[in-house]
Image (cartoon, rainbow over all chains, first blue to last red; front, side):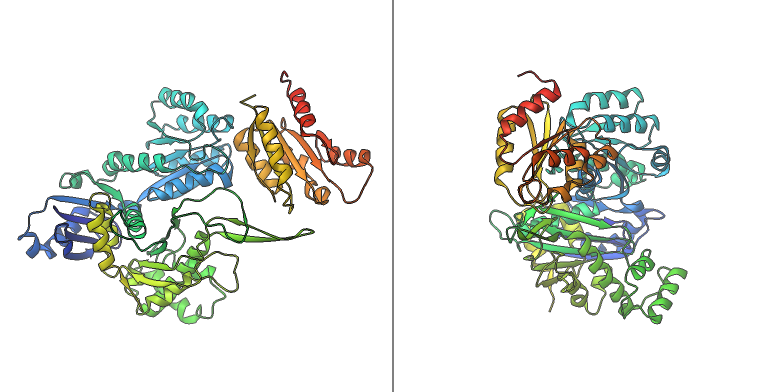
Length: 451
Length: 138
C-alpha cells in the first residue's frame, strides 16, 4: 500500500499531508501561508520543509494536489430559461468544483458578450433546450460566442439535436469545443455526471497550464482536482461509505472562507414528505452551492449589510469591518470573526436548502416543495479557518438549524456537529477513489465530533 | 408526430390529478411528446417548459372553478415570452356553477386561448383538433 504526499494550494494556507494507506495513518500535517499570488512552489517547499523529518524517513510513492489557486476554477454558465437549463448548467459547474462568475439566460446581447470577452474565465459551459427542444437560442448564442474567438475552452451540454451544427460553428472559428450529454435532457431532469467529468479533465489538461501551475505539475504524479471537487469526493465517501465500511449517512458541510462560503449536502435518496408535490428541477443528491458574496474577509461588508438588523451588528462590528477594509489580514478578532462566520452559515444554508410552499385554495391546504428537503439531515461538518479557529464552532454550526421564523426553509431540525480540525478533508478527497476503505477510516478518525 | 411536444398541467392551486393523467396517456397514445407538469402549475412553469422544449401546444386544465382567475393574462404572457406560434387549449370546470358555455368560451378566447372545452369533453376531440390545427394528417 503506497504512501502519498498530498497538497491543497490556493486558499489562505498551503496545506500538506503525508498519508500511509497501509497503516491508515496521517504521518505528518503541515501548513504555511499561501504563496499563490507569487509562486505556488515556494509555499509547497515551505510546507515540505516543515515535514522534512518524516519525508527523510519514508518513500513517497505519489504526490497529488488539489488547487484553488488564482481564484479557483472560474466558469461562465449560459442557458435558456433561468430556472431550467441555466440552473442545470450552474449546478453542473458547482458539482465540478467551479465558481460561476457569470450566468446568462436567453439570447446573449452585446453587453453580455463584452462581459464574457473580458471576464477571464477558465471555461464556458453552453446549454439550452431539452433534447429535441428549443434550438434557435442555443444556435444564436453559439455563433455569438464563437465570434469572440475566446481564449478559454467551451463545453456544449445542450440540446443534442443541434450538437453537430454547434461543433461546425466552433470549428469554423477555430475555437476549442468539447461536447457532452445535455445537462437537462428532458424537462426537470438534471444530468450532470458527464459534464462534471469533462470539466475536471479540462481543468487538469489546460487550466493548470494557463494558471502557471505546469512547472509544479512536473513534480506531481497526475491527479489535480479543483479543491471543492476534492472536498466533495471526501464528503461523498464519508457519507455513503463503501461496501464493507459504513459511512456517516446523510450529511451537510459548511466551508467558510475569506471570500466565499460553500455548502454541501449529501443525501442517499430524494425526500418528498407530507404529500407535497415537487416543482422545478430536481436537484442533485450530492449538491454543492457556492456563495461568492459571503465570506469573513473580502465579502465581510456584504455579509454585514445582509444582516443589518441583527443585534450583534453594532458599532463594534462596524469598526471591525473598517479595519478589515484597511488591511485584510492583520485584523483578527476571533469573537467578531465567529459572528461573521455564523452569518455566512445562516445565509448560505438558507440559499442552499429547498422550500416548502403552502397554498390555500377552495380545496384546502396544499403544499409543494422545490429544492432539497434537509430536515432529517443530522450530521453537519465544519470546514475552513473561521470555523477551526473559532472558540465556539458549535454556535456557528447551529446556524444550519431550521429557523422557527422561516419554517418553510427545509434545513435540519437537529444536528450533531463535526469539525475538520486538522484540515484533512480537502487533501484526503484526492485519495477517495483510490483507497476508499482506508481513506474512510482515516476520515472518520480525524473529523471530530464537537460537544 | 413523435417530434411534436405538448406541455400539459393543472393550473393554479388545483390538485385534481386524474384528468391530467388521462390527457397524458391519450396524447402519448397519439404519438405526441408529453411534458407533464402535474398539478398546481403556475403560468410561469407552463411558459418556461414550453420555451425549453419548443412545445407546439400547451394544454391547461382546471377543475376547481378558479380557472378564470388562474388563466387571466396567460395569452399575453406567452406572447411576451416569444411563444407566438404555440397553440393554447384550456378545458375543465372553468368557472364556478353551471354557466352557459358560450360566454365562458368567449372569455377564455379573449385571454388568448385558441380552443376552449366545456366540462366532460372527450380528450379525443381535443387531440383531433390539435392535429387539425397543426396540419398533421390523421
